[in-house]
View (cartoon, rainbow, N blue to C red):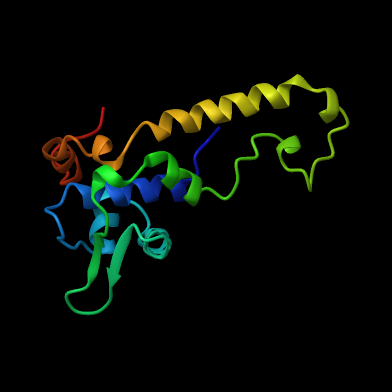
Length: 149
C-alpha cells in the first residue's frame, strides 16, 4: 500500500499548523517552502481540508490557514480515509473494473483486505497531536537548520 502525495501533503500541512501557536495563521506558500513541495498542489490540499472542516482558509491581506480543531481531536486514520481516492490495492478490490477470473476463490484478496484494515487500524490509534508532539524538533528541521537523516 502506498499513500498518495495528496494525503502525505495533507498530513504535513496539518502537522505544520499543529506546531504553531493556537489560532495562528500560516500561508500556503510559507508551508510549501518549508517542506520544499509544490505550492499549487498544497493549495488544492488546503481547499479540501477546509471543505472537510479541519482548517479555516482566509484570503487576502492577513489571510492564511489555521486549524479549526484541536490537534488531539483530529484522528489520522480518519484524515487518511477522507483524503485517499480509493483503497484498491489490487484489481479485485474494484468491483466495477475487476476482470480477474479467480476472484471468487482467491485468498489473496482476503489477505490484502485484512492487511488494509490493519493499516487503517494503526492509523486510527494516532491523532494529529501524536504526530506533532515534538514541535521544537519539527521547527528546527522545517527552518532548514538540520538535514534529515
